Image (cartoon, rainbow over all chains, first blue to last red; front, top):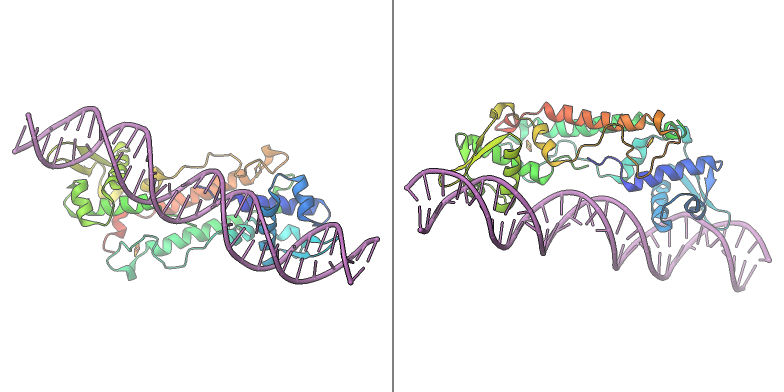
Length: 132
Length: 132
DNA sequence: AAAAAATGATACTATTTTAGTATCATTTAA
DNA sequence: TTAAATGATACTAAAATAGTATCATTTTTT
Ligand code: FES
Ligand code: FES
């Protein structure tokens, strides 16, 4: 089971790099220092920007900086942006198995499972990964 | 996040069908009654057979039957057969993030997460899905 | 005003994983 | 001996993930 996508991986490294740089950096600079493809990382940081984790400034001297304290960002915050969440109470099968889908316990179990995943991911801060 | 793969989906339906048929059935018969492609289901049930959930008999009148009581088979038992498990203590990132990977907490958190997933899936029996 | 250096938006392509097919071999009952 | 089943395995198709390309917009510097 793959829990961390490539996008989340890059996003986290980029955040750590920006933090090390004193809180602000540009795609070009980040990519020079970590092994990520420039346009891909750009797409990723744009998503972090649109979702309030970073904020961006255009033009010369611009780049990305934190919009939320580094120490408060969790793995869940990042993962959430790149993975589709299961709708509560929707059947995980292509066509429902249960004859009385109304009484089905699995549907809720499945979203409980997802909740647990996020609960765990929420307990890990990006700053916990940085030089532990 | 997708938790139930197509193979798991088909496997569960097939098990329920076999159970309804009195404990034994053949691929041809199962496929006539549920909407799964014959050679794909065959590959799936072969895996259940090799892993002690079903047992098979060849030749005319042959087919698949339970090797383990229907009521004891859990969603975890089936999922387990079709998804690669994370190795305990392996870094979830392409290249490790932590400078001192020895002290890394995330590595273990990630396998804890997987354990929780299986814990939840273990609590759902296939028979729970059958006409709940 | 113009050029340069940054991000924003978005459509396209490649790679990998998941899903499904085809085929030949083996077993067993009629 | 043939038909009806599974075993093994290599191949192909579809979907999801990963990555590229390009043009637009903003901002600073000259
Ligand atoms: S209705 Fe889908 S598993 Fe119960
Ligand atoms: S060593 Fe990989 S996240 Fe810590």
